Each structure stands twice: as structure tokens, then as C-alpha cells.
Image (cartoon, rainbow, N blue to C red; front, side):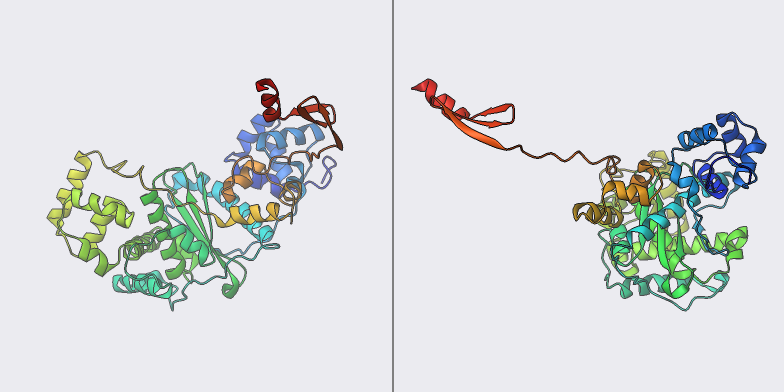
Length: 412
């Protein structure tokens, strides 16, 4: 590699560019260099000059240390489950994959100091070919998952916290793609020691939608962990996999017996009345009612027509009233490091060479959490003196007056 920036890692530039959703051409135009130059930087055929490197850091909003950090080796055959594999979301998929890789590095860093809950996800005997699973199998997996976690038949109070308590790493982050709501993966080199990761899109601030997305990803994690990775890329088998996760989510969030007992009539208002209890959308209750044969095809058709007529397709009643279930484990881990003085904010920024904003978003932290710590201050030596009936205390050159004494003097 030609001389330029010492220690420059080209793969990190590609990673950063993709994480920001930029093509090679777009980045070249912003940097005012040729497309060929950017390609050569990424392939380490040459290294950026210092002035170009400064621009790269500014444009991609990443510190210098990021571009000299070695890239971690990752498994080649990965099972990342997306809600859509349409071509329109390919750029978005690459973008969130890069941010997901940053999330795994953040979690690895935290686990050097903090013990996360052990992974307690059920392990079922599942096939490598999803086509071998029946609807009865999917329903059974949902029932057995609830039994494994001792959830009973009632509503789940907080799905995200449940996942975290069972050892999953969960994040909510902006995805910027309509077709990409969430994805998940068992991350690790060995199946017996891998960790479930769930990446939830934060673009749509809807609690019922987010709960459904989380339950959908759980379906992938428990039913499809052994699936042949090639099946995920095949449109036909991918559709089967997605439909199974849809069915699992419904069965997990709306158990057969409890939901059937709550069902009274195939009416949108009746479903809306159940929404605060089950914390799922009316649409999901319609689907689940159909799965359980509680409603017929003609009733379902009328429900969908009525739902559209009421303007509920994009937003349903109570969507704004149910609180979003936000991850808290990573946030608590960072707070513990700082509060217990295990790591300072400066040490965290040094160990994790990303922008403070990226770390905050992925870990669910306040945006200013990693800002510089305030300079330490302490009281100077002081002396007390009396002046008439007013007592005064001197701290350096400042004076603090005891207002009670001053008031007594005036009243006297």
C-alpha cells in the first residue's frame, strides 16, 4: 500500500461507508476524489492523504481510531433473518448489518466488565429445511416456549425485557427502510455458546408493532436456528420461513385458550377493547382469530374492509397510548461502568472507536451520555468571621450570606 495514513485499514472505510448508506460514487463526490481512489482506499491499494483522511472522518462522523482498528473475523455462513429480502431493501440491509456488527463489538466490550444474564432460550429439535414444519409444529413451538419460560397463558407484560432477562442482546435503532422492520441472529462461532441478537427498527413508534416484531424474531430464533442459510436467500423458502414466524408470533402473544376465552364477537370495537390487555394490534387479533377458526372467511373480509374504511391501516386507535418497550440492559451496563468508576467516559470512547451518537443509539443511552465529563471542582480552604449580627462564610473570594441572620438583624 502506498504511503498516506499510517495504519489505515481499508475494510473499515468500506464498513463505515456502508453503515452510512453511501455508495462508492457518492462518497467519492463528497470527498472530491475519484471513484477509483475510494475503491483503492478500501482495497488498501493506496492510503488516503492526511487532508483526505480528515474529510473522511468528518463525512462519516467517526474518530480517527476507527480507521486503524483491525476488523474482526466473522462466520461466513450466517443466518440473519430479515422481514424482507426485496431488492429495494438491499442497501438498507447492508447498512443495518454494519451497525449490527458495531453492536456486537459494543456488547463484547461491555462483557469484559459486566456479566449479562445467561442465555436461556429453548432448544428444540428443528429441521434444516423449514418446509418440513407444519402449522401444528409452529403452534406447538410457541406453546413450549411459553412453558419453558413459565409465562402461563396471560399477556406478556414486556417482551423486550423478557428477551433481555433470558440472555438476548436487544437494540432499537433507526433503520430507514419501510420494508425492514427487524432482524435477528444467533451470533457466535459455536452453536452451544452463541448469543441471540434482536435488532428492532425504531422508525415506527408503535408499541403493538414493536411487540409483534420482537415475537416474530423470536420465532426465527427458536424454529430456524438450524436452517440451511441458502434457504434464506431463496424467495420461495424465505416466504415459508416468514409465514412460520408470523404464525409463531401470533401464537406466542395470543395463546389459544386465553385469547379464545376473551373473544366475543368478530367486531373491530370488540378487538379494540382487548388491545390494552394484550398490547397487540387489532390487525393481529384478526389474523389470530382466523388462525384459530374463530371467524369465517366472509367475516374476515368484512373486518378488513371496515378497518380500511375507518382509516386504521396506517394507524390504529391506542397506538400512541401504549408505551414502547425499550431495551435497557446495555444502557444499565454503561451506567454501571461509569457510576462505579470502572471505566470513565473517556476510556469508553477510546475503547469503542465509534461516534458518541452511534454508541448512544445502539445502546439506548441519552445522546449526551458520552460527552466529556465535567472538570472536577472542590471547595477552597475557608475561614469564618462575624460582622455585626450577620454571620458570613468566605470561600475564596466569594461570600455566602446567612439570610436568616440578615433578616433577624433588620427586624431588630
